[in-house]
Image (cartoon, rainbow, N blue to C red):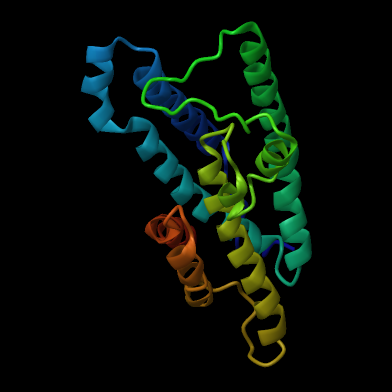
Length: 225
């Protein structure tokens, strides 16, 4: 339950910010793949979409920490189920739509590689690769994909690692509260739990360690707010 001393934060400005960030990601892809070559080369160093994704990570650190702190204390399973329900249906839908579009273009002979990207391999439409793409939200799933349909899936995998860390800390906190008189989620505790990010980052192909500071920054902003 929410603490009376901690009123709910207004997320309407966050909605406008999320829309702006999503548009910046789309704009970067437009510049890279559809804009005239000279303009694409000029715009490429600015990485406006990449910066937008990093801001997304910081925003996620803020929002997810608040949810864990105010709504899901001692409820790690409910927290993780909520995250999966928010991510998986939309992810499945997006993967299947992209797969269908690729398949139609391939059958009509209109499928071609985008600028700066490799063409799809012969195994792209195989059952194993399609299933691997449907599980592309899971950390490490990219290692068993011959071709990835949603190139932005790497960001979702980074998010999933953060959710797992938060769920683990919620589980640990529900046990620790029986020993120590600490009821809140706690910035220090979350920082310690975030160290779980490091072993995965050292072995992950995406190099996820570099994204940890953005989530920690968002987490710190929540407690400051």
